[in-house]
Amino acid sequence: MENFVVSARKYRPATFDTVVGQESITSTLKNAIRNNTLAQAFLFCGPRGVGKTTCARIMAKTINCLHPTETLEACNECESCKAFNNNASFNIYELDAASNNSVEDIRSLVEQVRIPPQIGQYKVYIIDEVHMLSSAAFNAFLKTLEEPPAYAKFILATTEKHKIIPTILSRCQIFDFKRITVEDIAKHLAFVASSEGITAEPEALNIIAQKADGALRDALSIFDQMVSFSGKNITYKDVIENLNVLDYDYYFKIVDDILQGNTTDILLLLNDIISKGFEPQHFIGGLGNHLRSLLVSKDVATVQLLEISEQLRQRYIQQAAVCQMPFLLRALDINNQCDINYRSANNKRLHLEIALLKMCSLCSQALNMPEPTNNAKPAMNPSQPQARPAAQPQAQPSVQPQPVQQPIQQRQYTQQPTATQQPVQQAQPAPQPTATPQPTAAPQTQNQQPTPTATRPRGVRSSISILGAMEHAAQKEEGPEETWDNPFTQAQLETVWVDFVEKHRNVSPSFAASIGKYKPTLGANFEIHFPVDNLLFERETESMAALKTHLKNTLHNNQYKLIPEVQEKPAEIDAYTDKDKFEKMAQANPMLRMMQAELKLEGDL
Image 1: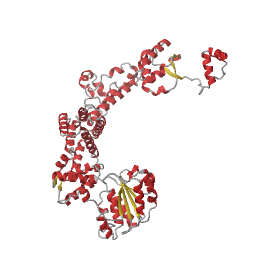
Image 2: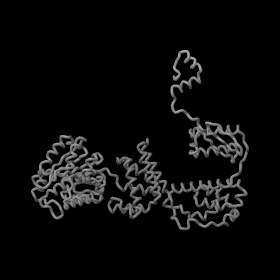
Image 3: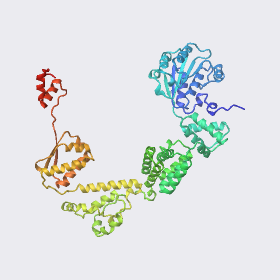
Image 4: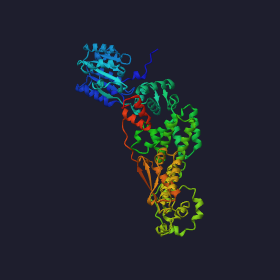
């Protein structure tokens, strides 16, 4: 029975041209060989399975080849190449620093460097996982690495560059290997499959490439695993079943149900996913990637960021065309918060279901909303509110439950008065606030249809409506305010002041302590002077606003002025001598001086 060789070894690149995904590094090394500008030491660093040791072996083989090709590749015919292919080359040494990391191992290597090569031009030392060397071993290696013989070349490989001391890094040419893209891995897997006579669906190879996470060796190992499972025909269904990968169709169906507001199917589909053994947090991460893919599919320029097959890319573009940008941003935020708080949630499944229902609420009415038009802000007709003044009280109950939109609020506010609206506002300031609970929405029912915010998801519309209502209320509050100048006494001021401090201790203890430390003083023209240690309390704007409101409502006076006065602290002695301490105690207890005289003690106690 023939021994089986895994694909990672059988199809390991033997030339620079066959290295996958590292074209910039291989071209640099070939140019260095061509121009005879090879450094004495190289450092290949990067994640696992990206070709560091492979490139080191190819370089060692190429620079010792007696008859290199025109493209600077090894000929595989000379004595040096044959010895390398048979693992019998005396010019190339591979050292595993994970198991040979002591000073004695490095000293033995330094002794070998003194012997010139027998065949070929260079002696190449490949030290893998070089970050595992001890500090003493690194120090023993410094001199040889900096000034080796002309025929000695060192190639160091590591996955953890940050663990190598700076004195080693400064003596090497550093090459950073990148993760291999999903597209490059899928192409290489297709080449291996065709070489082995195996039929594989492109979607299946793409899933294997994504599962490998940029490591070609891992991808080839998964490929061998799938060959053992499926035989000579690798299908997409077999891959997601064997690798426990959640199918794309689940995410497309979830988003479709969210857009349609179909909460029943969402909960049933989530139950189906969990019953098949998938971890809910794994589903959360996959849904976040799916929403991110929809987001980048909204633009032709960013759709190229998706490392997927062309057929799947078209599905993303089609679903992204249905999704609105505000929905995707809010859904991504909800998904991210769900992922962050998932581990701390007691009922994890309920936590995930609530997140999905929140996404569903964003777009439950998005598909039924009209598109925005250019005449979103219709011109106001001043005669309209005058023609229908009596219709306002009857239309109020039918309009009140509807969400209030900002453009409508602004029209109601400006149209509620008559044509002489500004004189009326100045002459009748008191009835103004009474009009707020009765919006004149009935006369504007014809102008509500072209509202520009109609296409926004429900969550965004409601937030904008609330902000509009708050701004409208603030505008009304900014109108002429009634003057309250009710006089009050010092006793009344102190009573009201203490009452506020006691009530505000639970809200802001620091603010209450600052203003409650001293008593306020009533001055002329309702000036309230209150001592404070410093002005840090003014940073608490909400507490200051609460204090002003409390004084205005309880004293029935809005003409007062708060004037803080910073207290000057007496100068304190930085350090007391023994004599100072004694004088201090003697002032408090004169008997100490009598005791000092009777006992004949020194005066500088």
